[in-house]
Length: 356
Ligand code: SF4
Ligand code: SF4
Ligand code: FES
Image 1 (tube, protein in one colour):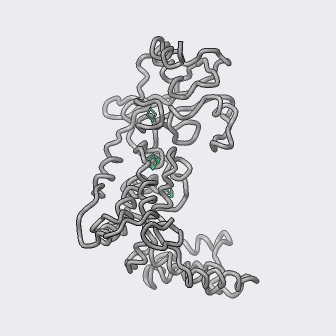
Image 2: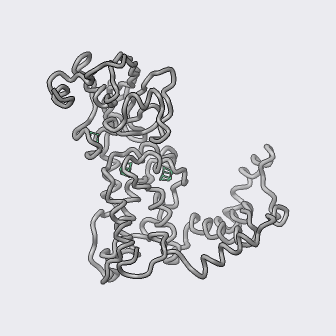
Image 3: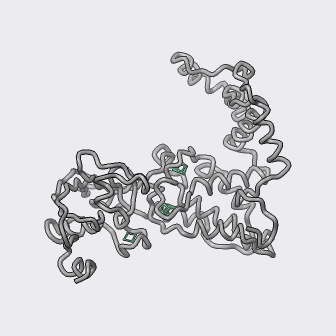
C-alpha cells in the first residue's frame, strides 16, 4: 500500500513510526463576534515522511474532527495550506516534521524548541476559525492593482528574454500569503499592499506587453505602496516559491525614480542616501532627513532626535568625521556603474532583444 493510499483510507500519516511529537495548535473560534483563541496539545506519530499537513490530517481523522484548516493539493502548488509554523509562515504540506524537530540549515529551518511543533493561523489577517484566516483582504489588494496586461501607448514591440524571465519569476507566486503573514510593514500598516500584491504589480510593470507602465508606477508610489516597505527581507525568507517579493519592490522603486517620480519621501530618501554614500562613504542621517522631509518636516522630527540623543544614538551631522579610508574604492564602484549601468529590471547588462 502506498503512503498516499494509506492517507486516503485512514488518515494515518506514517508507515513506520519514529516516535510521537507534540503538536501545539493555536485554535480559535468566534464567540459573540470576538475571536477566542487557546492552544491545544496533540501527541502525533511521525516518520521521516510526515509533513505538518499530514500530521494535521491525522489529528483531524483520529482525535478531533473539528480541527479546521485549508488544504488541497498537498504538493506546494495550490497555496492553500499556509500557516504559522514554529515562528515562521510556511506551507504545511512542504514542511516535514523531522526537519522541524532537528532543524535543517539547507531549508532555513531552526530546530523546534523543546521538541514541540507549534502551529497557528497566518498573521496579519483576521482569523475565522482555528488555522483558517480571511484571505479576502489579501486578494482585494491584488485585485486593486489590476492584475492583467493592459493595452496602451507604452506597449513594447519586442519581448526581451531578460525581462520575460523576470515576469516568469514573479509568476511562480501561488498566492499562499506566507510573505503577507510575515511582513513587518503590514503589522504597522494593515493598508500596505503587501509583498505578494507588489510582486504581482512588478510582474505587469516589467512585462514588455504592458501599455500603462508609468500610470502603474505612479499608483504604486502612493501611500501604502512601494515606499512603505521596510526592506526587512522577511518575505524573501518566507516565500516557498522563490518569488523574492522584496527584490521586485526594490526594482519598482528604481523604475519609479528612473521615471522621475521624486515626489515621495521614500524616493528622496533613497536618492539622498545614494548621493551621501558617493560623496562621503557614510550615511548622514540628519542631512538625509532634511532632504527627504524638507526643513519643516525635519523640524517635526526633533522629538525623535532628542530621544535618540538621550541614549547616545544621535549621529553627527558632520560626515567628514567618519569619512572612510577607502572612499576611492566606493567612488570606483559608482564610476563603473555610471559607465556601465545595469538594467534595473534584470540587474544584468541588457543587450537588447534576446539578451541573457
Ligand atoms: S521586505 Fe517589505 S514587503 Fe517584504 S516583508 Fe519586509 S516590509 Fe514586507
Ligand atoms: S510571493 Fe511567495 S510567499 Fe508571497 S504569496 Fe506568492 S508564493 Fe506565497
Ligand atoms: S496543500 Fe496545496 S500548497 Fe499545501
